[in-house]
Image (tube, rainbow over all chains, first blue to last red; front, side, top):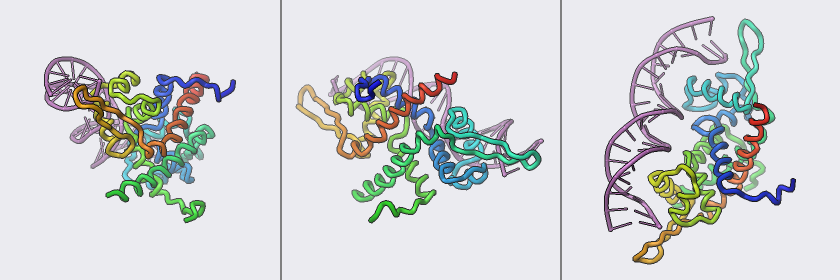
Length: 116
Length: 116
DNA sequence: CAGGATCCTGTAGGATACTG
DNA sequence: CAGTATCCTACAGGATCCTG
């Protein structure tokens, strides 16, 4: 299969875009992924690293990300239960987009403040 | 300014991510950008190319995209008024992300159908 | 520490009809 | 053709308190 000969299909593209948006959509999923990428693994750690997020949203989003195979959740120990969140290899397939979006956001801020 | 020496700042990254999400957020902005990238320029053309979108959402999103400098709106003629929507050069700074997201969405669909 | 349970609200977005 | 104007509602997301 030669990828250079893939025929672009508009409807399929839009569907794919919406699928992607569905997985990473909402206000918090990308910030959470980014927090994990920065080495945070514990619930409270992640919470503190993302200004404004509530426990409700954090646990909700973590679940969805886990369901989509983007992150993993591991239980360590028994009595003082330790939970470890990590990005999966699958998450790494998204890191390029993540970085590009960060760069874009930074440039965009310059872009709009430049012109008032 | 050597970009390789940029110190990564987590809070700034998250802010940048949320800025980007704000600009392209919602259900329709990326599909619209993609439609324009595919050569559609007319309102009804764009509308027809995006299954499910309503005129209300289309005009609302087009306005916001124009405000953010992502697309341009040009009026041609006088009597049978012709409107032409086009992506701006600034929109092109986003095309890499757009393509990556399309690729990711397609792969993701394979990924999840594969496992059940 | 790692969340769950509730309650509440704004707004994104849908449906439908209409206009120059 | 290129949109406006209304009306409506589901749900994303916030606030707060509680639990093992």
